[in-house]
Length: 439
Image (cartoon, rainbow, N blue to C red; front, side, top):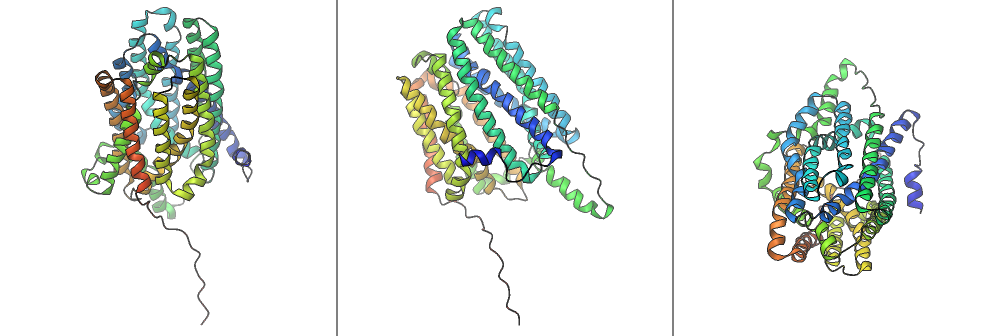
């Protein structure tokens, strides 16, 4: 309880000039939780209930990765030429407009046609989605001073978990008490409304004007601008240097690739497995989603303490061990309580991974060469997602859906054991300087 109180009540009062932006950033993510708890949780389930094949669900999973691979480097070039605020606002608005196209589908088209239309909408939506995913990090960095970013990010994560949990529970009740088509129209409407309200609050964030710099500080200013643009350099095609792969970071990328295979391999399988094999109701799925986000919120509150005790590497490793166990539980969730328990425990594991993985990777990237390393990291992530989206249906058709889930669990287990067993990197600790004795 004290952690929650400290999260929402910072030790220092927020400066008056920052309160407006912080409020709109909080409302942005709170409304996004409305989208997450409705459309993003249930779109795959809806497609499965329409009779979508694992191949079609694979395309649904692979389309974001495909668009990221195609448009990440052009997006990086665009962001170096255009104002970050303009790119963020317009790409957010364009992406969120696509959600409204889902609302009439349940009563407008036959089931088989709906699945292909959903795939087309998802594919097109991820063109501006790639832009907003890249631009928002720079947008957030300009809107929030460094000393406040941890506080703002923590509150945003908490609000996202809370609104997702409440929305998921509400959506489950709606789907249980309304006819199939009308129920999903309401769900899609809720998600689309939340998406547009999220975009609305991004438009209300006002980035501070950059102060004029005296001529004597021009050299320092150029260095600062170069540092600010370092993440964008990771989005250039020229950043993909092969020499990065020759050392320890290349071996780390192999480990990350195996981890991502274990994550994305189940994407096309889970919705169909939930509907056809486990025969779960929408109410049960919504309750499990709510439990997941409650646990994720609690796990996030522990991340800072655990990272100090274990380090980011082992925190990620133990998180992977947890989600390995929960994936096995999910595979055999033929009783409702097992399915709900798997979501509850899994939320903690994924919270540890979310807090540990990227920081663990950044610890192994030289500070003066981050663009090239991050470019390969982004490429590996998207390549794994695309590969799994295309191959998972074939693997599931060959060995079965349950065996595919257990294969993904095995991949997670391998990476988790390696991360827990390997000696973590030792970062230098600050020590106060000793005063020299007077002579």
